[in-house]
Image (cartoon, rainbow, N blue to C red):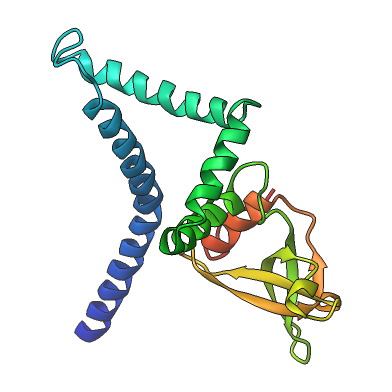
Length: 198
């Protein structure tokens, strides 16, 4: 009886720790990134004191939000685009930096922005005999540039409780489009299927 209670306590303890991580992790990452931008804006401030000790952090916080907004606005402007393309080409000439930069850029653009890659959720038949399926996202429908036959497509299968996953090359007949929001589907996968999808 005592061992059973201990086992149940340990199981509940681990379960609540995992649930706590699910709640805390996204908030922590968001706050950490925002803090880093906030710290950058604060460190580049040429004035030792703007108004007073109590109001300065709020002014810097507003400045941080405006800074992020202006970067987003500038990146969407016609004037900035050719400058950005030229800078990007310069970065892509540097061997080691090119690999890291392009990988990070592709990862972010896959989730957010106008060129999102994870916007086509599909149901992939993994095992036809037992009718086992997995949810994924079509990333490429034409792989001929890698000498892969035209009926094969690439599908990214995200893992639950993380941002990692695996890429598979599969026949398009084994893939069924899903009539659901890509964002909701991604949340559903990451949460292990506990999130409700509208």
